[in-house]
Length: 516
Figure 1: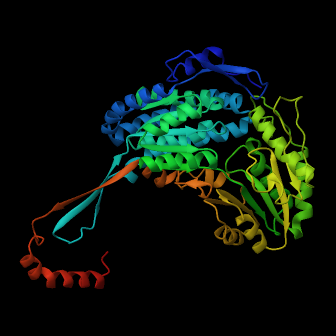
Figure 2 (figure 1 turned 90 degrees about the vertical axis):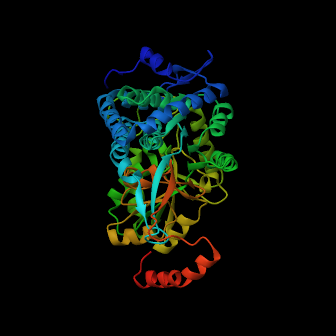
Figure 3 (figure 1 turned 180 degrees about the vertical axis):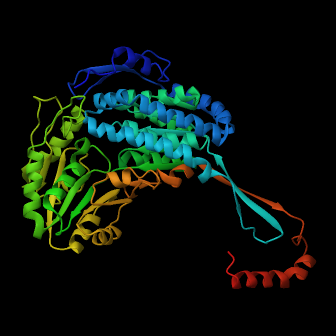
């Protein structure tokens, strides 16, 4: 384990960047020990309004700077992220409790998102000609105008990558951002922001506020021109309702109760390794992690044995190196939630296949990766999102039964299929009701595909991040049509009488030549 590259002096410099006019702070603990890591300033509703006002002025110049300048700045930020990688990895671990390998996934994702949006924004958002309604009478073009100030509300669990996935495309599109950071991920977000500021993003173009959702989050949603939220479905519904009343857009990545289907042709050992990571990366505190495993009965015995063996022998730890397989839950509240779901299930007849114990000798919020069987609809773990170190295993007799069970959820964020046959995997994937489906992987295939959209269906959210769709969130299309004067359009009853024949002939001709 190397000595951390981050300490109190750096924490103080980073937290000075929070927009906060008062002196109130709150202590933020680290999951590795439960001790206070740093003191985070508290923003007020007035601070949010001030940050948005400054962002509006700064956004005008940022948008006028053009694609080439924004590309230059964002690519420089990408390089600074790489240069400061060890610091960012330390901060992710210190704030979230995850392992270094899982922190590395976040760093790679943030860099990928930055590079993709820097290089793709002009191609996706440049103006284009469109077919005019009456050929030769006019020409039509569509251009894209940045929405203005974007509000971004990100959670603690993937502070680095989720911030990048919303903030960077907004910047690439020419928007300014005011971001509400969760207390537990604020240092990571501030270090990410600092790399972009040092690369040339004006300070006011990306502001960070922190504080209670009831004050800071509400004020942000009241002020901005578009809102990005990642979090619970209950909170997402409230934000969506408020955005709807204001007639501003929103993208909402919400909860999930994600399913994995293990088909009967798998290699049990490989499938167990894939399932273990899909369920317990970041100790299950990931919106796209798996909480329901449906295993075909033919392979259930060897698969279950391999899964129990793998999880039972996994190493838990919080060291700043690559020696641990799984890390810690992020807070006392997370530990309480996990124990609540587990105790409820066991009291109602569920069986613990592996895990099921807190590990305070390692750290205050460590908990063993836990797999249950015999989970029924009467138990909280059956349909509620646990968002922690508990998954449930079910036996099924056929593909069809597995698909129906996987789809029988109010959520539809991510799903996974394990099989030796890619064709079979794709067939099952096509039948699953989820915004993302991974074949022979848990979540990283779709999560890491920054050129493809990511988001949920049903109660798992609205809108998409990543890919061209992720950029198009932050612009309004503007259609501009110019009369050519070659064919004057009718302006009087007599004109229409003269033109009726040619107009109808034109419509028929366009149909014949299949011209849209």
